Amino acid sequence: MERFKKIYSQGSICVMEIWLDTQTGINYLFHRDGNASGFTPLLDKDGKPVVTAL
Image (cartoon, rainbow, N blue to C red; front, side):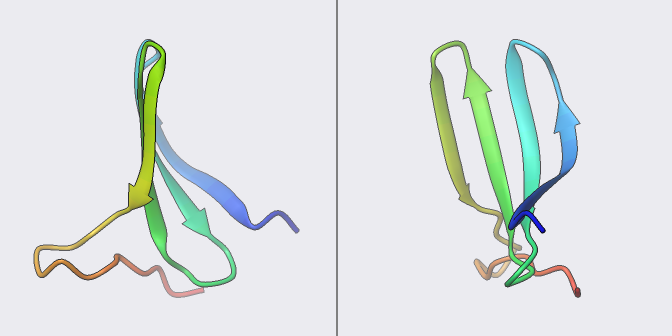
């Protein structure tokens, strides 16, 4: 089983995706625009990581 699973994607040049860590349940935001990209935990309004029940 792969650890990360893509659960949402939009865009082709300016890409935004949400990835799920299947071991911890934490959601991550991936953003790519041209040659620049970033990967960070997705946070809720209180600054806590968004966790999906597994």
